[in-house]
Amino acid sequence: MFNISFSELLIILLIAFLVVGPKDLAKVARSLGKAVKKGRDFIYDVKSYVNDGTEDSPIKDVKDTVADVKKEVDNLNPLSDVKKDIEDLNPLSGVKKEIKDLNPLSGVKKGDRKS
Image 1 (tube, rainbow, N blue to C red):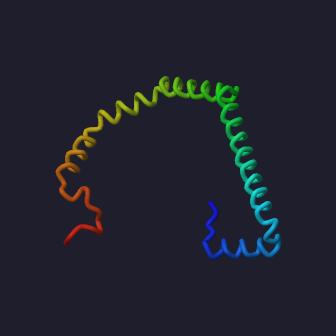
Image 2: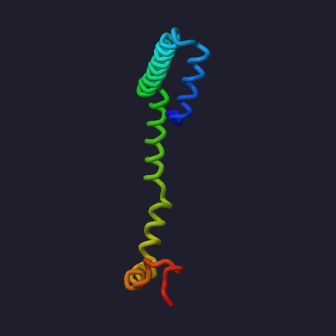
């Protein structure tokens, strides 16, 4: 989590030992551990609350409705049918594919070709 090396950890512990003292160092470490645990629990609770709240929210309903409307509009778009028909009528599209398949250097980049 924290990128702390062993030497940095020793320096931190030495400073804590000097500031707090040997008698109270265990108490401080214990209370610091409890505070970190409470912080993690709080973050977990907030995440679970947010995730649970978005499943039943009206925003999800609106999002689903918009996705359905978009799908319907895409299905009703007459230009998509025309585009498919034009691509099917293009006689060169099949020839381009065949030439690409026959060319042994089609998968080789320009810089990789041998002269």
